[in-house]
Length: 242
Image (cartoon, rainbow, N blue to C red; front, side, top):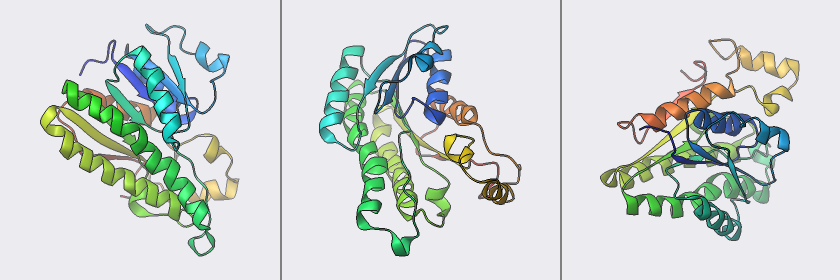
């Protein structure tokens, strides 16, 4: 698939992996729609100044059906989404034995249900035009689990199941759906970890470094362009889970 002039909606794209992914698609000539809960800063918008298309911005809390409806209305003014990258997500860590039900559900509501809330109407549009690509951000935690992240792991495992199902349902009409499962990526979240914790994590990674957001963005570009990959989860983790 050629990406020039394609409309690409990247959720959670005002920082980290989402922002890097938005840059990668914009660099490839796509019309990118940035998304977040808050308006991106002028500094972030200025980063796109040299690309063919300037990014549009659509805001909204994906865990709210009403907010998603408003978001889709704003997106409609821009055009029909060709590529959807579901990146938005949160964490709220605690050992399972002490995790409150509300704490568990908040992460599920945002990461998994929020992804479905946005994906379903866009998937319907793709079915009608018999074309489209969806890329979902999962996590190695959704494959291998992680201590203190029962809610996050469940949400990201659900993303993989959703990906595989939508891939089967969309294939006959030319729609491809894949997932990316990043390992430890150098973001604000990893930067906040203590030196001790970072060292412990690095010992588990054969490549002995954290990944870069750009490396996840490059994987998203690959999945968008390769027309014969669907229903797959691409692990990008430096060998962490083998």
